[in-house]
Length: 361
Image 1 (cartoon, rainbow, N blue to C red):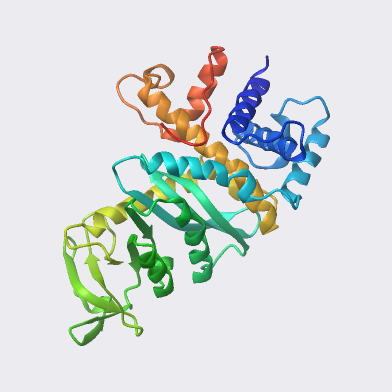
Image 2: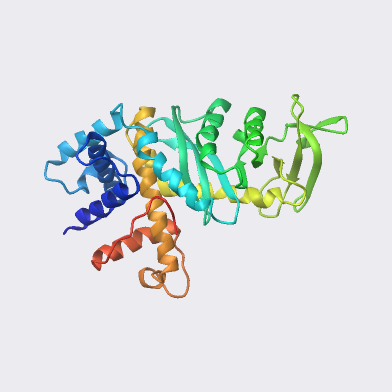
């Protein structure tokens, strides 16, 4: 059996196991097309449809496979709720069984041709795993707070009320409507804010920039409100750690016994997700698709492919493969690169290929 056929077979089997549909129905056929997309994305490390088609073993011509993929990303009955949400539900159910808090990160990045995606991700092993997204036209600019809130409301029902959740965001996600929504969910948050954000403490109003900081300094203000809306009370943190080029300013509703800055550092794992989906991975930003709806559906396959490869990377670490596929003395590869190498190794050795979309360990 060819490498491409082997990869497709195990992916399709895993999709059916986690989300079974009536055999031979239209939904089941579209699920098989999803398996083809995932397999082709992993095999080609591209999201351009011709590249994907070149790595999918099927009886018809490549052009027919490309047309099949185009129909999938334009089909009115292909949606996030049917072809991605079931795996997110199971992934969160597994992660919420652990003792540590759930950490969510929201971020925006360029995808496709002149489009941008707003993503909500869960942090695991210093990797951001995509839970939900919204795609819009334009390669620059911020999303609306209503878009931020919509993603929160999409994922919040999947997380038990008893689970501790910490939300992290950069300067785009300090809007008081969003922070109110997070507060109402009973979650904690640490969000970066601008240096001109107004702070009110004991009747005195001033901006972050009026706090004089030098490298190595940190200042925490308790029980303050922010903006002219007097939103709060919360913590306001100004920090200029030695590894920062300039001060950063944070707002948080964490209790005084938690360090918001240490939580915020986890936000940087979103950069690894972006690079894995782009320059070091599937090159999502180089897709020629310019329609936001089509990009959003293509991201279903790309994100499932990403979760699977991260799962393989963890297996490489926990099952002793790292010294075989990389080196014995140290590991310089990311989980994503380890996963890709392990997949190649397992295929070459004709060994069983594990596939999971509902867990990463």
